[in-house]
Length: 503
Image (cartoon, rainbow, N blue to C red; front, side, top):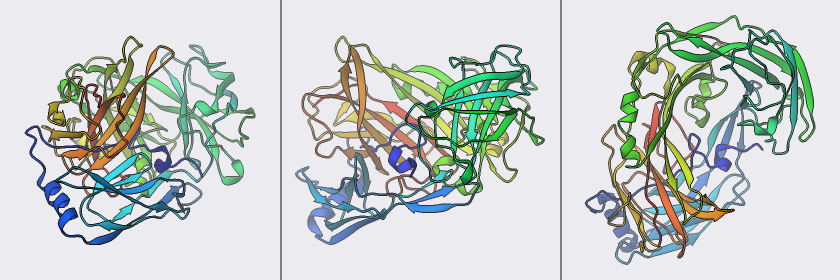
């Protein structure tokens, strides 16, 4: 089975997920107090269960298979509100996608699935996901693809190539730095060669299963208001069967799709930039972009409904943070007319972390919004949820570097000033060094609907240094603490990066 959202451990994308803590006054959320008390006093014994159906949405037809949980470490933890002690209740995962933890007292639990913790009072968890493309195999070994083709529109230095296969759900891009990349003015490809394993979703293609290989020219254009953007222009479509590790050669002609469309946005970039210091007082702005694409309607409530390749429009015109009204942007559309148009806007930010004299590691996060494309054209594009406020490690401000936080630390915060968070996600990262450079490893991801979380045993280790990313999520009708891989539109998230802390 190809790597699903479950096995990749991704939440839109791109970074892992986690959960959060209390507000800046240190007052325990009433739900936490009630749940932890009930764990001690009620003594009701329950069973925790979960299922993991993965729905593959492909041109050749949809298929549902269970995600194999037999290798997943499953433990339910309860926490005593008086002593702070965690009690572990071991569980099991099965090949049929089910998980089970028997004999768990009532109240809030931390359900551990590998390095992910779901913080909830629920006893039934939906661990399934919906994936774009058929069930397949990811390519991990170097697998060269060489393309010779005619029919390009005269190549421009700012053009690039998209790779995709609608049935397989494969996608990626080819830009400079590969053999045979076209020069300015070229109208053909002659021996363009790239490593398929470098694609973002390199599912092995098999023509006998209905897979087609598509290579699209994303061409630099100018909108009605003079804003530069890139849009789907011409596409090469051919059949291809791959064997991992073996080269394959294809040829054909780029043609222009008959269907066309337009897209226009009122992009309030300044509204995203205004939140930069809430990400971290020292955060650096890095990029801002809008993508518009299309997906099967079945993915409207799935991870893959996030706007992504194959893109129809890509807008990142400059490095400024000023507002833009684009006017009409045109594109050619080779995708099925029935597919749902979706769009994403993201503003990126970074913060650097360093252990001692090691070269710093630059951590990237973003503030983003995913909606149907029609929502982007109907109203100004701006954040739907902002970063959490006043993050704390225990009772100390989390933006400073801290020592002596203990191995049983808590993280706490206040609600965002912008929008309403429906869930919170916290990633805990451990810092290390390798070859003179600082390294980062995610060691835990927690999901909660509260404003507080306590770190279970083993997450923090004495002598190590950590930082946290606290994400606020807006996703009405979906609970990331009970259905961590389910998605719905609209959705949005914003991140906060803490300082470094150690036990």
